[in-house]
Amino acid sequence: MRRHLRLGVNIDHVATIRNARGGRDPDPVRAARLAAKAGADGITAHLREDRRHITDDDIVRLTREIDLPLNFEMAATDEMLTIALRHRPHAACLVPEKREERTTEGGLDVVGGFDRLKPVIAALRDGGMRVSLFVEPDPSQLDAAIALGAPVVELHTGSYANLDGAARAAELGRLTEAAAYCERIGLECHAGHGLTFDNVGPVAAIPQVVELNIGHFLIGEAIFGGLDSTIRRMRATMDNARAGSQGGLTA
Image (cartoon, rainbow, N blue to C red; front, side, top):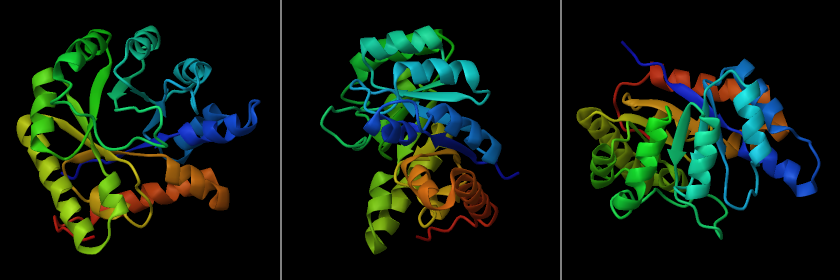
């Protein structure tokens, strides 16, 4: 039986637009409600150290006012762990974070950060949250995730999205192999970063991937076509790719 492919909509950049001017509009919680009506299976929000987009109040409102599961993206810091344990979202996704970066650059180094990550993951799991790790499609990182007791990984698709031609096909191959390896070792496999209407199909067609998290493109495209229709189109594009998947590696 073909797996349902979940869509997590990241609403960070609704907050980015709001924060550029201050005030309350546009409201990311309203965006989350619209996403739910348009076919999203979950909402993703990244609370950064510098609060450049999502704020603490946004997290409070999302946990109280949205019925969909909330995927709380966070750095593995004491501050973010305290916030996660206070609000207890459905899921917590640990991501690398550098203050100077514009967006998340690459996957978390689970191998190098093993000892630092271990108590954070244990605390999140004890708090009842599904823990995922945002990683590169590298078997050593996946093995480390299993060793740490993380049940889920999200494969970083940014390199795939930024490449063309043979280089993109090769990166798609890495993602496909990593997803298959996840299934063999018992990890639930998600994917995300840089996905658009034009490039999401081959990733959506990977049968072991059960969730895609997409944000920046959807919010940007909504300027031209509206958030509801943009999410519905992404949902349909993903579903069509999954329905037509024959296991080939087309880019």
